[in-house]
Image 1 (cartoon, rainbow, N blue to C red):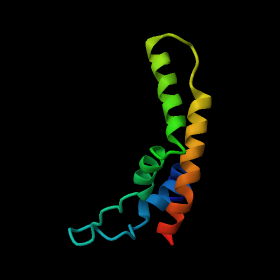
Image 2 (tube, rainbow, N blue to C red):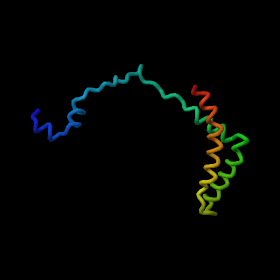
Image 3 (spheres, rainbow, N blue to C red):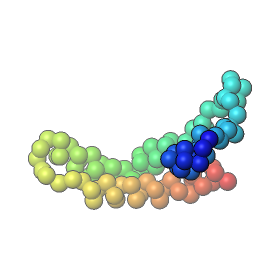
Image 4 (cartoon, rainbow, N blue to C red):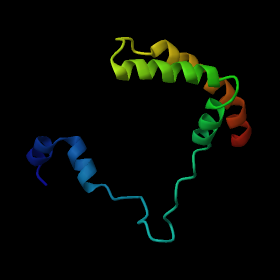
Length: 99
């Protein structure tokens, strides 16, 4: 390659064009499935606890009002209160599973 051609292409295009792939080719033996996320199940379970159920009910009522067009509120406060409750319930259980 001439010096002028290298300058025209730029450094990064040359390096990436000439770099060899260091990743092994995936075969049927090396393909692994991602593990299931335990947080999803914990979120669902904690959302139905006695501590979070009233907050979930308020959120659902607010969503119903918004969908019916009865109000122009966004239900942000209800959502944040519900998620705060769920996260407080999930956190200790999730970290126990991850240890």
